[in-house]
Each structure stands twice: as structure tokens, then as C-alpha cells.
Image (cartoon, rainbow, N blue to C red; front, side):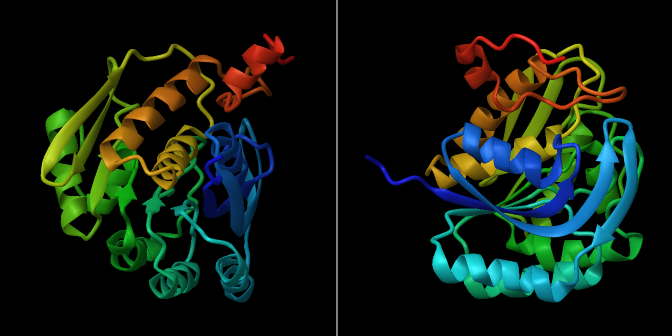
Length: 272
């Protein structure tokens, strides 16, 4: 039997389980990898929004990273919510020392409810310290605009943004187009070529955690030795199905369904 690959998420905790480390761990498990976590922040949030955020201190973040790498072979790392300069710096320091084979960065900046999860003064630090370490960066349109300082309204502008982020040091860039009109088109730039990933848009309001889930799926597939193009394509298929089977939980934006295939086999058709 092939040894199971191990993937770690470095991100914030989502108390309602739809995004953050909870979504990452569910994704890792659903895609046949062993998931671990380094928690950077604790959020009080639900489907209606983020009510409070508490950053962890850098010492415990450093200790979590070192504890895992000292004991377990890490096949891939996914980085999500990193809200402050100090947190970004300690993560970059540790990963430069540990040099994992794959690093996927989801540059979480603003939640779907509009809460700022990356402090404004930390944006440049993320660009300077983390993006150059990334094998793949997965910004949505708003995040790509923040990183590049350019307005994005169509696929051509997505391509330009991907090139700009690549020039900042990221080996591969996926600009996700879920916020554009029409079908959901993502633009992948890797090894000098563009790839377009298009799926029919799923008509649902329940998209909480889609960015976290997509980037985690890429990390899981990279850990399983798929190349970047294949990993991104498979992650796109996975997130599309997770959205199609999204759970109508709470009074706001419900979560995607990470275990839709397992629930289908178990005969679970709906969640009240």
C-alpha cells in the first residue's frame, strides 16, 4: 500500500467549520491525505459574518510549525489567514529553514461578509516574504487586485494579474474568477503558459470556504505527486462538486460540502 501523504495548513480557525483550518482539514481528508494544522488565529464567526478575531502569539505559531516538522515528513504546506507582519515573518522564517517541497498560498484578505482578515499594513509583508516562497498562489479577483493594485474585470486582466504575481516570485498563479459574470473561469499561469479552467456556474448562495477549500485541494494533489496543471484541474473539479452539493446551514452563506462523495455513499441526502 502507498504511504499516505501528509499536508499541513497554516491558517486561522473558523468556529462554524466552513472555512479556515476546518475546511482545510476536511479537504485533506476527503482527498486521501493526512491533515495537520498550525493555527494562526481564532475567529468567532458563523454563516452571517465574522464577529471577532484573536491572533495567536508568534511563539506558539513557531512552536507548532517546528513541532510538526521535527517529527513528521511534510509533503505540502497550505497557508491561509496570516493577519499580521509578525505572523508572516515567523512563518517565512520557519519555511525558509524547513524548505517543504510544495507551498500553496491562499492570500486571505477579506471574508465574504467584508471583514478584513489581513491587516492593511501586512499586505506588503505578505508580498515580500511569503509569495516568493510559493509554488502556487490562489488569489480571487479582489485579492489579486489588492496584490497588484490593478482593477480586474475580465479574463485578459486576470492574465495580466497572474503574470504580475509570478514576477513577484510565485512559481505558479491561479487567479480565480468566481466573482465575474457568466461561467466560473480560473486562469492558471505556470512554466510560461496559461491554462483556462472553466466550469458552469453553480446557482447557490452557499459558498462559504470555497477559496480555502480550493487551495487546500491543490496542496493535497501536489502532495500526492500530481503536477501543477493536473493538481489545479483536479482541485477545480473537487470544489465545483463541493459547491454543487453545498449545505444550507445557518441563516447566511452556508458552507461547501467537503464530503459529498462520502455522504452520497452513506445515503445522506440532506442536512437540516
